[in-house]
Image (cartoon, rainbow, N blue to C red; front, side):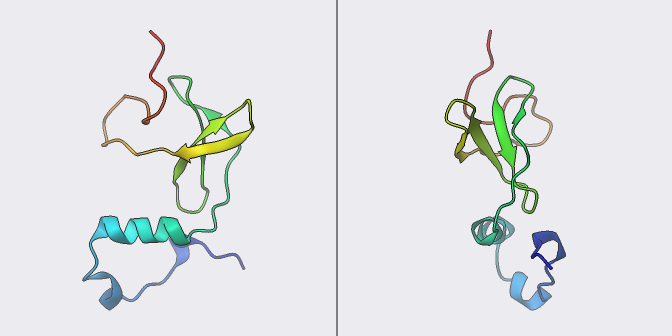
Length: 88
């Protein structure tokens, strides 16, 4: 059976001393990443999302490769993920 971050059972004593952002980054680094098909965002930015940990990566259709990890925005923001700016 494949390893899934959402199914991981981590004892509470191992997570109480570690800040949540640090723990999230650790999970992202250890994730074997299985990606969805490339999508175009609301502002025309192409991206792929890992189906296991949910991390988004910018996608370049010309080279057909992921180029870099996209940073998440605060909830409620309608701006695109960091990367290309929306067309005016």
